[in-house]
Image (cartoon, rainbow, N blue to C red; front, top):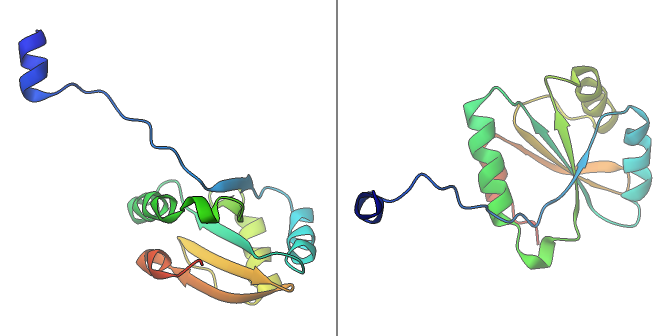
Length: 126
């Protein structure tokens, strides 16, 4: 068994460390809090569909982009399937049409940028 494992490799998964400071967005009250926090620091909202293959791929690539320089950046994670009403309110509050997956960059209480699908991975977060 050992020789086959060395030839073909095992099924072991390597744990990938993420520098993303994920914060669950699961309450309408958090939207006002995000607006307030964004007056002193940049806040990100990542809208994710857990059933979408594109969304799964994009979130993995997004996490890989986070270097040590970005690890203190606050990123709110919004599960679209469980919190669709919050997603609708995010779109209304920040005047951004809903897409999935989607990244919103919030500064001074407004969305200064947003991207969806693979365009998320091209945004320069620095």
